[in-house]
Length: 446
Image (cartoon, rainbow, N blue to C red):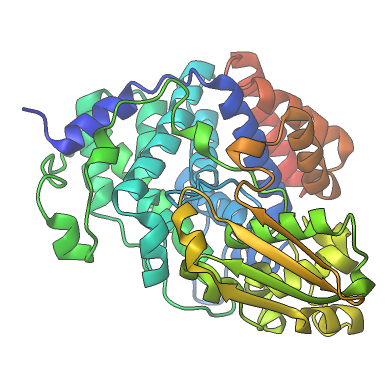
């Protein structure tokens, strides 16, 4: 009788990349984040690790595993990459750089293998995080993307290098033993992006070890290993559930703004209300969200750093009111001391609403209530925000987002070449080859 891990591996091995439209669009979206990430202060800190220091070797070299680690960290630190809400994971930040890096060194490009790798990686991260209740354990200090990254990277790599289901199970078992999940509290510069890159690196390492005959424990998920070693309960049902025709990727959201996903519904609803109320008319804003993340987005620490500005609901709403041009700027400059923005932030209240908890974690809802200077009230409840599967971004919108992010880094022409190749790379060997060349060129330009 097959173990849970072996059944999980069989499902991932059968991922065939048939949802090519979704794969192409999420590939393009992740590439936009990748290029935008080159401009952040966090990525500048990462790049310093690629340089030698007196008596110290560089942390990142030219090794493909080092490239994977750096690329993963660069995408994820933007907070404009895709996200699966119920599992609270950001699969594209891990899966796309692993797949692209391995595809580039495999010799003859295979769009079919590339598509299988993307599909398997998305499936693995989402299923594993659902199994451990990622959206809940996040607020215990366990970062579900970090926890799931080794397994997701291993699944992606296993498909790219052609492992069968048995060897894929070995890769997953080895990768699980390398999973952590708790990156610690905030610091500057934060090592969390670096840690995620190393977690993805570890997953590829696990797949390469399995390809060379190393075996993992196939029964690791049958007992209470996760609870004993990590304090995390595991519901095995999501791991072995039948795969939907489109795969788990169909439920992944796009981020239309640079923001923590827990802020997106409030930001989307506030922008809708601004159609009928000028910022100067707004006397007060009340945002209510599920209790799970009210504290996370309700803080007043926008001046402390870039991550705090990305998670602060008051700061994000102030930008929407006075500097909407900066909503998808991943640099997130500190304007919290500017007069109009500071004054507006002071008028924003964030509160917990237990009544909204029923929507979470399948959705991250928010109710926004405006009190206008003349006494009028405006309010809206947003359950499905812009970019969520029910209000998904189409190809035109995602191409426009990609160009906003990539054009300032590599220029319009190279960005368009890269976008066209990305949209065809899961079905065309030639397009995949072009994509690899375009990425090499764009990294040099960036």
